[in-house]
Image (cartoon, rainbow, N blue to C red; front, top):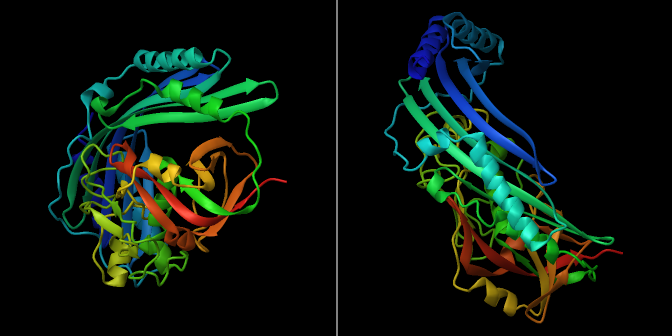
Length: 440
C-alpha cells in the first residue's frame, strides 16, 4: 500500500500547479466487516475494503471538488486534482471565502484505534450475535430477533496548501438488536445497541436480553387522554433532543437563515439546569478525532451554559465570514457536532419518576425539532404513562407538540445518573406542562 501522505501531497501539488489558490486533499483507506441478522439467523456477512482520494480546490473563493475511489495510481490522482481545479475555475466566485486553516498544533486523542478491532473476523461478530439471540430467546422463546454487527478500520492523511499535515487512524465496533414479541393481536418491540472505538469499551453481553425485555414491556399499550402533563425523556431521547439543538447551532445554518436559533446567542433558551458541551477530543469518544475535516484542531465547546446559548459551531468558512474563532466542526461538506455531553443534575432518575404525579416517560425515540421553526411534533413510539410516581402502562397513538425552546425552558429536573456511550453523557430530564395528544 502506498503511503497516504505522499499521495495527498502529490494531489495538492498538482492542483496548485494548475492554478488553485487554496487546496486540501484527503487520502484514505478503510475496511468494514459486517454481519446481518434476520429472524434470528445470519442473513449475510461481508468484508469490504475501500480507498478514496478527495480534492478541494479554490479559485476566487469558488470551490471545485473531485474524488476517486478504488485507485491510488498516479494518473488517476493527477486527473482527480486537475478536475477539481477545472471546476473551481467555473464555480461562482465567493467573496466570503477567506482561507483554509493554517497549521496549528493539535491534541493527540487517546483510544481511537485498536488493532484487535482491525483484525476482527466475521466469525467473531457471528459469535456476538449468536450470544444475543440466545439471550433474547431465554427471555421469550417466541421473540423475533433482527440486528447486525460491524467492525471497521480506517486510515487517512489530510494536507492543504498552507502546510496542514495530519495522519489519523481509527477503529469502531458496534452491535444492535431489535426484538419483536407477539401475543395474539398484541405486538411489542424494542431495540438496544452498543458501540465503541476500542474493544475494552465494547459490551455486547446483555443487548438481546434488554431488547427483548423492552419489547415485552410494550405489550398491552393503551391510549391516553389529550392534555398537558409532565414529559420525562429517557437518556436516548434526551440525547436526540440536544444533539439536534447542537446541529441547529451550526454557523452555516445561522448564516443561511435556516435555524430557529438565529438571534438567540447570548439569550436564555433552556432551564438553568441545562449545560451542554460538545467535545470532539474526549478519549475513546465515538465521534472523537484530533482535528476536523479540514485539519483544524478539535476542542471542547460549551454550546449551552446554565440555559444560555453560548456558541455557534464553526468551520473555517463560517468563522472567517463572521470574523469569529473556528471551533473545529468541519465535515468538509458542512458542519456537525461531535460528542454531545449533557451535564448531569443532582436528582436520581428514579426520584424524578417517583415525584411525577402524572406524565409520559419516553424511553427513547426522536424528539428533534424542525430546524427552521423549532417546532416539535413527535410520535411517542416507546413511551409509558406515569401515574402517582410509578410507570403504569405503555402508551400508543400518542404525540407531543411543543416548541423546542419552550420545552427546554420547562425542564425542572435533570438526573444525576445517566447512560454513557463512549464520549456521550445522556441523563434523564423532565419538562412540566407539555401538551400530549392522545389517540382517538
